[in-house]
Amino acid sequence: MQAELRELAREKDAVVLAHNYQRAEVQDAADYVGDSLGLSRQAAASDARIILFCGVDFMAETAAILAPDRKVILPESRARCPMAAMVDPVGLAELKARHPGAVVVSYVNTSAAVKALSDICCTSANAPEVVASIPAEREIIFTPDCNLGAWVAEMTGRNLILWQGYCPTHDLIQPEDILAAQEAHPAAKVVVHPECRPDVTALADAVESTSGMIRYCREEPAGEFIIGTESGMIHRLSKDVPGKRFYLATEATVCPTMKLTTLRKAVEALRAEAPVVAVPAAIRVKALAAVQRMVEIGR
Ligand code: 13P
Ligand code: SF4
Image 1 (cartoon, rainbow, N blue to C red):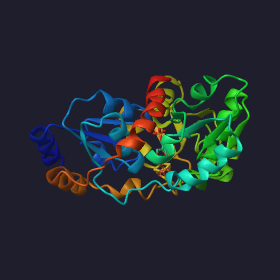
Image 2 (cartoon, rainbow, N blue to C red):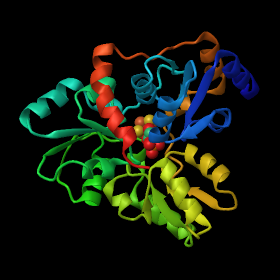
Image 3 (cartoon, protein in one colour):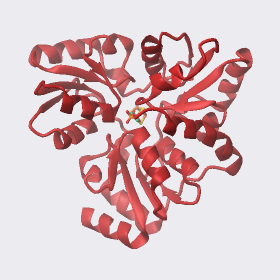
């Protein structure tokens, strides 16, 4: 089926993008595997007719915002990120009305309608840089991830008005999980995602986006790492950083929506060129400014 997907992609002039949390067999059939920021940049830069996005709803929507002339396909339409669903345009508009001078920073894990109400988007790879780029005297509303927001506030020393959303998968990781993993692997460094709770990030040697984790584990002299993020990352790290060992902080971190995309669904979706993800023009134009600023900031 991987060969079938590759052949279809060639025939149909499609680029296959897969997030680091996708199933191993889907990652291995993709043109690019990466984090939210890297995949957004790939979507913007690619001149393929079709973008097959093996990920979740907000990622495909972001690709459609950046590349409106391309057909963006999300193989599994039920692959909706629960954290992105925790903030809605009506609630955000109310919060903005209470803080009329505030700059709204929204994590890329949001709907296009929420992005359209935001001044600038960020991903976990560039959130501190995005917040630091805002003049010190301005109030900042940060949506929707209160865990990422708490970490960014600590990194930048800025006071953020936090929306109370969270990632149900990362929020599962408890300090006890890290302590138990350290007891089992005393020589290992602990690397966690900034979507983890503050009492978990406080125990880590490094807090990194998924692609930042690859860089960190490659550059660190240590040979073993405890990884606090979604399970798909272990496949990615084992492939990209050969000769080192990776242990999930807890086996519980399986994102159900990320795992909905199977290789079979990817093949069928590309063959049918559906389901297509499109963003209405009025929303797209407003969201584009915020997303463009996001792709321009950070490495
Ligand atoms: P990154 O790949 O940008 O670190 O995002 C993590 C995530 O949870 C995406 O849904
Ligand atoms: Fe959403 Fe969390 Fe799953 Fe990422 S890992 S898609 S933030 S629920």
